[in-house]
Amino acid sequence: MSRVLIARNLPPAVVDEARALFDVTYRDRPEPLSHDEKVAALRDHDGVLMSLGDSFPAEVFEAAGTPRARILANFGVGYNHIDVAAAQAAGLVVTNTPGAVTDATADIGMTLMLMTCRRAAEGERLVRAGDWQGWHPVEMLGLHMTGKTVGILGMGRIGQAIARRCHYGFGMSVAYSSRSEKDLDFPATRHASPEALAAEVDVLAVAVPGSPQTRHMVNAEVLAAMKPTAHIVNISRGDVIDEAALISALQSGKIAGAGLDVYENEPQVPEALRALDNVTLLPHLGTATLEVREDMGRMAVENLRAFFAGEEVPNPVTG
Image (cartoon, rainbow, N blue to C red; front, side, top):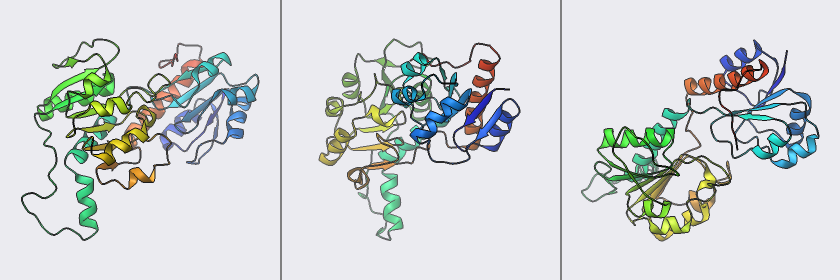
């Protein structure tokens, strides 16, 4: 029976399913693996089920020498915390869990859009602080989303799910920027670059995968292209946006607001960002429902099962 490390605490149903298939070592703790724990994981197990925060850079594989492990099953769709090339060079297959996260993440994207456009987080803080003086006609005026234009940066599964909600639910026009033209079941206009997209939209939703290629894709130039009344929402990975440039744009009023579920150096969130009223900050809630986390776990376990059975893994990461 293959020996598998589950590196973080997961829903009990997922752990039980894994234990029925593998010799499981269960690290029932929320904090990420330390460097030494990661090296030991590669040396002492045939497979590792790990997650965001458990970064596996090249130096971990170098320290492990010739690892016993042959598969890293990532619990999550994003894999920018893994040096995939180094893993493959060390003889490991890397997998992830797309699909299971789509609707839940899109829902959080919509939550953030509404919260930042309608200043909901700011208003909630006002009420909790006891500072609300009552309704009046020009209090806390925000952006009316219905009928506006949403820009989707990255029109993959999650980007399309957000776009559908915006188009069919809010009557919004959809624009997008992606590497290729998409065959979509709703009307949408493609733009050639992130800057061109940013200039045309009222809400910019960032939904590209986290990778070295997408790091700081939203930079000062993209933010400068946005309308001063526009809002940006990020449900992808924190380092897709240049956080320092975003803070500057928010502080100076170059954009109206932001809704963030992810951060460049999680869980650290800069004080300058936390001090701003025109930003909504969530603690990476994108997939935070029990049923979705169970689905993600089952996908990770199925990747492990298929690999050790000599089958093609359902969700390989190719780099």
